[in-house]
Length: 192
Ligand SMILES: [Cu+2]
Image: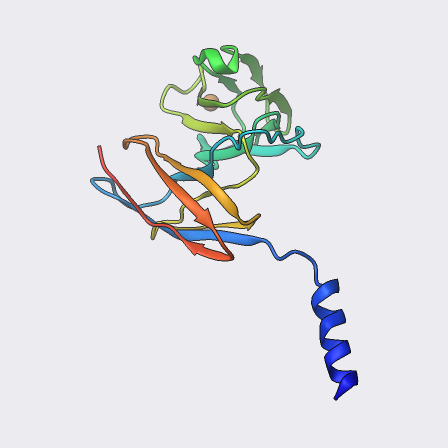
């Protein structure tokens, strides 16, 4: 009997700390579907996250921004690629994104902007007024975007108590306290 007990103990002691996850559904009322809501863990007191080295990308193709909603950790650089035969521009009217304007550039070229602080930045194109997208720069790396059915999953969240927030381009934002212990389910319903 002694050997199995010792082996079992050693196994428990050497297992890495298992991170939890937050998942669930955001029901978006009064809009076509429940896609494009950003769910994220708000600032955690005493904890900061270094700016990611890896860039994120938004493509301009067929006269639309893709993706339409991009959450990033504050400090992230986003590369804007023009994949169309026409010129595109990218600018933001929002002060938290320094009202940046990257100029206009042709197919195959990229220009970049670093979102330095927490910000919901509207992205527009001066050439095509109907083009619109959003970069949502948030204070933690724990975020996700909902699919059309409203489902989302934020992986690798350390167990603990947090404030979970939801942002949507057209609907009222919402906040919920959440205690993550392993796999944790949190649902929202948001409306105008
Ligand atoms: Cu354009």
